[in-house]
Image (cartoon, rainbow, N blue to C red; front, side, top):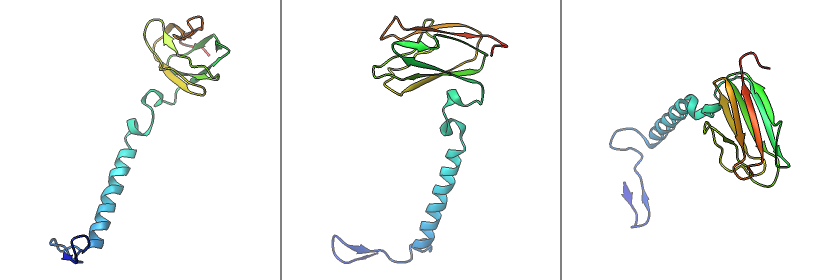
Length: 141
């Protein structure tokens, strides 16, 4: 390394390891490329774990202080997504504490995959008069 003054310096073209600066840059870029490729191939980093499967899907809207539809029937493995279509915030809270969303502002969504058959009653904890139900049963459509 050649020092011109206390603020500026110039690196020698060869380092003590014998590799030139360009070779080190290429190796660094190659390491980063391999690292990013490895991270991108890990499923939990590439997509939402609750939505990882390609199973059936259903959507429930929140509009006019109402879940629309108010009741749906799905098969086990279905991912239901609730979307808030109005300006006031809403939540989706299972009466049996199986799932709970954060407060959803306009256009925000919450998804839950129903793995087990049964009836799931839910409500908006901000507006308890907003109620809905997901019925999960085999062979439903």
